[in-house]
Amino acid sequence: MVVRIRLSRFGNRHQPFYNIVVAQARSARDSKPLEVIGTFNPVPQRPTNLSEEEARTAKAYKEISLDRSRAKYWLGVGAQPSGSVWRLLSLAGLVQESKKVQN
Image (tube, rainbow, N blue to C red; front, side, top):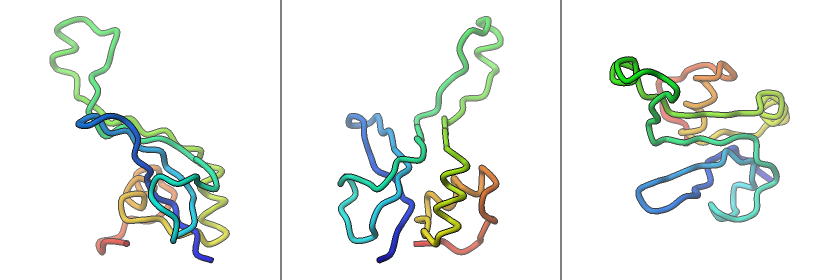
C-alpha cells in the first residue's frame, strides 16, 4: 500500500483552504484521511494590528501550519509527498528542494 502526503481541499468557491493530509494513494481527494498533519491557506493575507501606513507597505503572506514531528515520521516510514506538498515541505526545511516536479 502506497501512502501519500497530499492536499485535501476545503472552503468555498474562490476561497480555497487545504488540509495537509496523509492518505492512501488510491483514495479520493476528499475522503477520510489517515491523519491531518497541517493546513495551508493559499489566499494572501495582510498582517493585522498594524498602523495604516505599515499595512500598506507590509507584504501579504500565505499561511502554512504544519506538525513537523508527524511530517518527519510519515516521511521516515516511506510516505510520498505530492508535488505541491513537496514544495511546502521544502519551505519548512523537511525535504530538499528539487528541480523536477514530483507527482
